[in-house]
Length: 631
Image 1 (cartoon, one colour):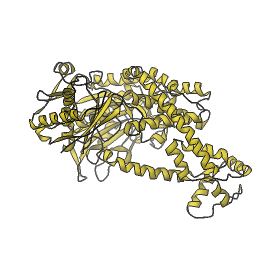
Image 2: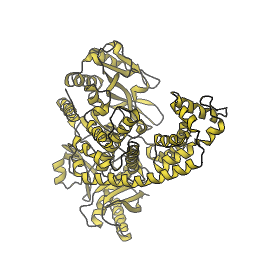
Image 3: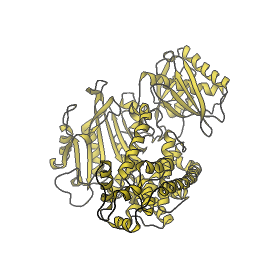
Image 4: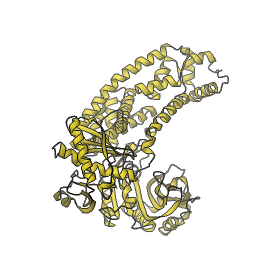
């Protein structure tokens, strides 16, 4: 029986290696060549250039375990299975094997390696729509393996993947489900929660073009994804992921600090899950070089830590983040970068928690001001309302009627419209406490109800939606391209970063300068590098001039595949840790620059145009940032 993540990951990698797959690195959570997303969100994310047709140095069959961050479901964290940080098992065929072999390998891994009885398996396939036909091929393959027709369901929305942006690879997918109890029913109902998804083969059969046409792809790809956490919980017959090996030590530590029992009280249990999830995710984000800030990845990190602190307050604990972090380092002792950066991680957690606790105190003062301007509901009446088994429904109906201009007084307990108006904390007032001081709605509710006030959750959500719409508009440029943008403008700017990197090393006479982050949009490049001080105007001009000199020389850009050892001997720049395996792509620009890279490049520097630095600033302690354009 596979009990923990290490056993599962090893079994998975060993199996696919036996099927001639090469293991590729578990890369950073910060995408190296993709400006369209903040974090690596899936195992396939770093492979986008190769799914689009660029040859991969390791070949056409690949596998790995990839750490991921997803924040779109952050409000769902707190249930039994949503997580911000998770690990994803993946195997890929880049134009090699197709549906039959992919499905057969997935089935063999589930039944022979994980020893899941096929009687407990069911699958979904693509039902077909105007863009693509019904995927009867996959269904027939599953039937040939012993999955009866009653256990195969055809769906549309859940069984189509992509494209990630407006254009690109896409296709049907076939999902695998496991019956988590005894005696599975003969017929598969995907709406029954006892069927748990444990894997998904994406069959990238089509390419969507700019005119919204779906055409057969010249390179058909397979992309399997399976969550480590969910698989471990499923195999161990746990209906709550947080009782599995990679969570339980963290939960036990929270129980120890709070004196509260996990699973006893629904609200407390939810708070424990949120704290465990957010602290773990924060640890991994900091380990990849991000610190709390008010922009991009740093903002997400800050939000996670502060949300954990808020729920810590709910559980009546403070200054706890570093203590809850300790079990994470033990659970994931195979991630060397966690151990290496442990001191820095704990320092950032402690600093952000202390800063936020000060903000919380200010928030409580603001809440007091809001409450002082209201008239609470009579204690007896309010107590009667709070004891009602339908109190949430009653309060919801009060505010719904109020919004629609209808009479909204309550007969039992007897509350007049005036009493309700006087005691209302408006959606704007509640959202102010949430947005400016970090109070979660549950905490605002608790504070308000302790004083005899009411809040409309819907009005709060409306205010939140307005804010998200405004914030989202500012981020449209970042996300509009989907996963990877390999446009001509991005390709040129990407090559320019290689010239910039080497120009900095030469002008500043520092061979230890390395890229510490990169973000490229069609409009500009942003390049982070290690250097202890602000650059002078002359230094910046010299860097700019050197880059433009190399552009004018029209130097060919050459791509080669070689081993890591060969790349080292050839003087290629790269972070030579556990990131690379066997063969890598090395891009050489004359005798000026040589780097290990997987991004898109021009054929000749003469294609780039005029390079201009528009800003140089601090990004973090010891890290400088340059923004530049091509004119």
